[in-house]
Length: 152
Image (cartoon, rainbow, N blue to C red; front, side, top):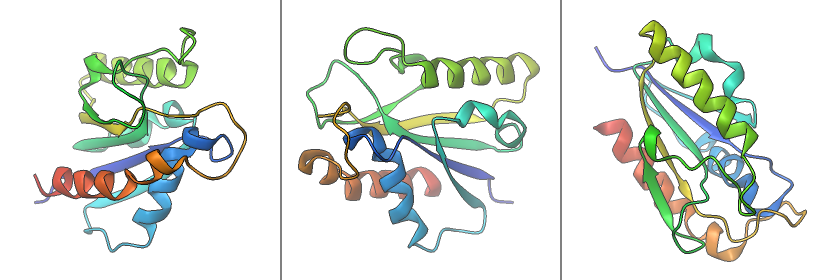
């Protein structure tokens, strides 16, 4: 039996690169995903669906990540590697809440294998519906990484 996989695409589509997950979800919607794979575009509310997360064998979470890497860098992170701050050093509340939800699922033994895939943003502050060109160019790379995660 194939693993139940959920792709969670996070982000706010009206703040330039912060909408990265949203834009990836729109590309994934155009594809035929395997029957064992579900897709959800969740904005900043990924933490609100623990009952759905716990039913999965694997979570693939797509978002921006404020790592120490150069802007535009593609990243694949394990749970313990996810940075919980935004560019000015303040907490990324959406990620803090998501990580708390995952921690609660671990306590009950219901946390699926979880991997985070995304990009370091170039601009997450400017209002706009388009990704920066540098981040937009990473969408096909992320799609290929998702395909690899699904098939592994």
